[in-house]
Image 1 (cartoon, rainbow, N blue to C red):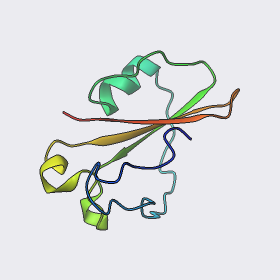
Image 2: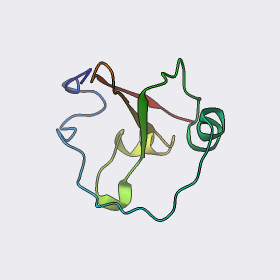
Image 3: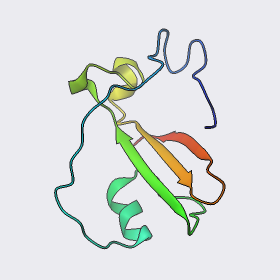
Length: 98
């Protein structure tokens, strides 16, 4: 994974080493194109998508007791985006906000 850990004081002091475990379940499936997915679920789109890639978007989870960016940053609706490449097995992470 790249990067493998947060900076000492970024996003904020004592940022949790792991995001909380939140069980998920599939409610429904639908076919959607990448541009429609990016328009509906990301703030800034998806740059340079790969054919063999899984993209997961994690919104701020204050209701689960985790602040992504501290109280002021959470007001900006920060998302963490994970991109997993099936060919290289590399996970890349970055954030977007409104």
